[in-house]
Picture (cartoon, rainbow, N blue to C red):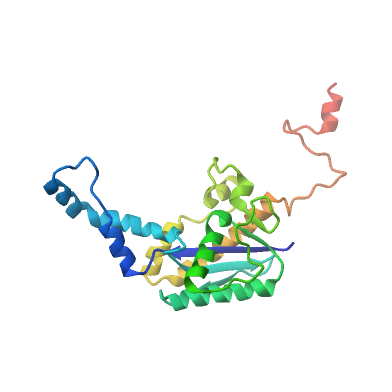
Amino acid sequence: MTPFYFDIETIPSQDPEVKAEIAAGITAPGTYKKAESIQQWLDENRAAEAEAVWLKTAFDGGLGQCVCIGFADGDGKAYIYHAQDLSRDSERKVLQDFFCAVTDAGHRTFVGHNIIGFDLPFLWKRCMVLGIKPPASFPRNPKPWGELVQDTMLLWDSTQRAGGSMDRICRLIGIPGKGGISGADVWPMVQAGKMNEVADYCRGDVERTRSLYKRMTFAEISVDGATPVPTPTGKTLADLADDF
């Protein structure tokens, strides 16, 4: 099947109540016993601790928001849909436009980096929160070994023990990496009004995913049957035969 590459960019919850609830739930370490020392710790650390927890809601599809989705059908152009503001209505339109593209593409193999562990479950949760019905072709709880979804993180290392970041894998196999930008930079860029830069970053991830997938599936590597195949020693099998 034709691969359909996609990537999403997310930000922390924009609901003030979520932030307030997180702050209220921050407690001092158990080593603090006296009421005054506990209060002092909270006064000095509550805000920073709450901010750190809040930032992590960008990984939670129930709380965070999707502000950008990039995709490419096969070898076609990479397209981007991004939010015009931080409202749920704007996020809803991003998802709806993306699902229209998914429907138009037809039956495809969905390809992305860590999409089984992150992108797909995040989008499904956002759909439930926002009341959006995904198209029937959009995979839900896919099996890593199935043909409907190909996750380049798992293609690299199915045990996920060898370091599976996209940037690291790109550098290891000679594909241009992210250039010093990561997902952690998305929210600061959004805050600074740099949504176009976020869109460019997302488009780059789609292109990198396509390059990774082609390398991992050897789609652009062919060996002529008449050409001697080098062995790890640098000799061909015919050379090795002559050594005996």
